[in-house]
Amino acid sequence: MNMFKTLLLLLIPASVFAGSPQFTSITDSDMTDITKGLGANFVHNSMMPASKMGTIFGFQLGVVAAQTAVPKINDIVKRNTGASLNDAYNAGIMGAVGIPFGISFEAVIMPTLKSNSASASASSFGLKWNINDVIPILPINLALRGIYSSADFSFDQTISAATETVKNTTTVSGVQLLLSPMIPVVEPYVGVGLLTAKDTLKFSGKTQFDPTFSTSQEESKTVSGTQILAGVELNLMVLKLGAEYSNAFGNSRYGIKLAFGF
Image 1 (cartoon, rainbow, N blue to C red):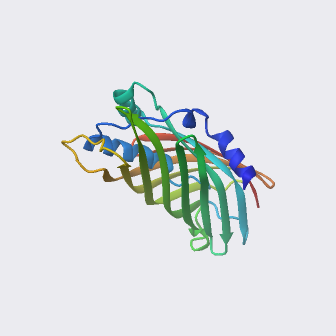
Image 2 (cartoon, rainbow, N blue to C red):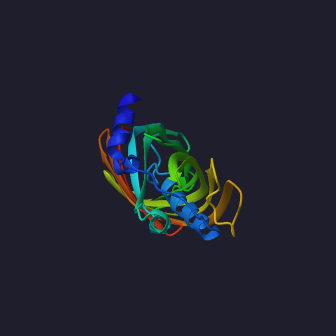
Image 3 (cartoon, rainbow, N blue to C red):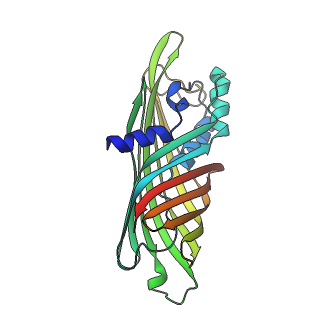
């Protein structure tokens, strides 16, 4: 596990832990933008294509990492502090197991990473069904995948000489339809999804929500939207290399994968 944590820290830029953003005067519109940006970042990202894993059984284990452009969250941070938060990041240990009937189970786990007053952890899961065994005449790989993810991060911010802890929790659930051609070695794929994201933002001290929005220390927002994705997996014997582009809730994410399996 320590080796995987080292890899994850190498995949996540040091700038993520070098400093913390400040969330102040958060409006209802800001909460929507935060939910959409973090939802797009933390949606399940195993980067597995549409084909089933192995002839009967299959297995993959590796690491994934992704970077998401979050311009509206950046606007919120710059408005409050003049700092920048152009991108959000996530990385995790990826594992997948394929069983008969085209069914596979996927998981991406980011163990708790800490630096100074900031900490982050995330996990996501997928259940994929390749339906080609049921409809064998299809000329392409076609799969349905249900997904769920949860992420937590916290950091300290100092407002008017008072230090408080900001805690954020994001959950994303949905279903995806994946398609890919039946070609060996290189498997490009595309997909569409329907997603729902919920974000909960909580302040340990004085509330930092705009008083016209809320006087509470904790608020939540739920949004729904679509996702489009396109990727490719390169199969070099037991080595698997992957890359994927995803756009969810209007935010673009780019990811890479390094895994081993059969």
